[in-house]
Length: 539
Ligand SMILES: Cc1ncc(COP(=O)(O)OP(=O)(O)O)c(N)n1
Ligand SMILES: Cc1nc(C(=O)O)sc1CCOP(=O)(O)O
Ligand SMILES: [Mg+2]
Image (cartoon, rainbow, N blue to C red):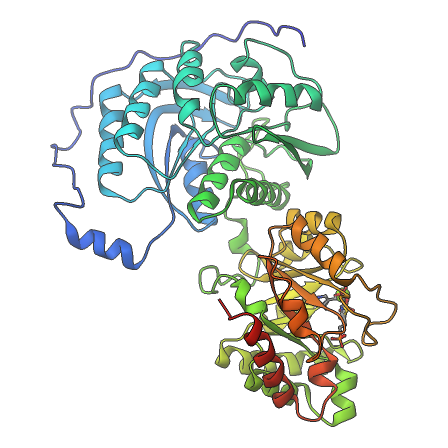
């Protein structure tokens, strides 16, 4: 690693006094003075991110990007503005710092009144501002702190005073859950070392970790040309490389702010750090992909569309319940040949399985024409909706979209979960068949909600399906934090032994022939459910 050239000079206007137009001061609310607010918050908690950052007049980055990213991911976002910048797609034309007293007051106003889960920082242009933030966080602790050490804009303009370095390193980082520098910022934080390779990024992550944050993410989006954008994540023990596609577009202004605020939104929703980073990476990549041809402004670096999902049907964001892994307890997977053999329609088979206690249903109709399949799927959706049982479609994203199913199950030779997610959007359930830890890891990276793992036992329902046994199932369960459902040859005789395995993420069994290759689907389902329940209660 060699030394980089000195940092560019900061162009800051001197801070002015508080505006004479500001409204008269009102007292700050506190839960003690307003108990009804506290009761309401308990009834309907809403993930809440507070961003402490600068305003970007072009709205591609800064506060504006943070608010849009959080809104897109389902979190409320309040804001403390540290600076007002004049910028556009050509660069930064001016920066005006908000007086420190007003920053202190904004922090007090929000943190004393609202239940903030996560604080995310962006542009903290002076040492004094960082000091005030640290004091406020000591007074009002939050669940997590995401520090994006914004020092240089994407156009190369400096956005913080060099004196902030010490305050970042010796103050804020020690309070941070994650610090997310890009390679230029990592270099600055480490006294100008140059970063050219993944090994350099790992070294930088290790060095920044020593300043005290729980996690470090060194973002490689600025690294020289490659088809992948690789970020290095470090938790003090292990490194994880997050690899994403490099989207060819001029519209990359605000990617750093968006990534950090998306991480904050996911943490506020209760995600683990690793999962939050993965979701945030996927979100930014999708947003860039959907915005790659957008033309806003005449300069070299344009904004992208954080709310791209609103334009992709059929979203119903917020109307869908979140996926409950417990629904994998008894997973009924249909088979049209078996139904035909017993004279059952798909609808009757699904109705009977739900009557018997199936907790989730998958339509796995391999030899049926698209049009009758869609008709049956729509009818099954009505049955499932009215019983509160999720309905997934095997393989066919088109059918799932057309009947507004709750999700799709795909295997290793189907289109990837990442592509399915692109098509279905964030609210739908995606299951992926996995036989190895590597497949499980990939499914998680692709945004899957659960894994189907099998064949646990030999099966005649799926041709040439390798049998993994309990050892194979164990390897997949241990390799992933995602919920797992076991599949393959499971019936009333052996289902209990599967549930007795007691891996924390093994949530249930998926069954075809032992439910549907039978005359009375409801009583077979009921019997199997009582066997499962005798081993493990539905949590
Ligand atoms: C719950 C569940 N697990 C695994 C599978 C198998 O999916 P796949 O490997 O894509 O094979 P097909 O079912 O498409 O033959 C599944 N369907 N459900
Ligand atoms: C559809 C399917 N997938 C499997 C896998 O191992 O991924 S085994 C399987 C068939 C399961 O049918 P039955 O319950 O009749 O054995
Ligand atoms: Mg498949």
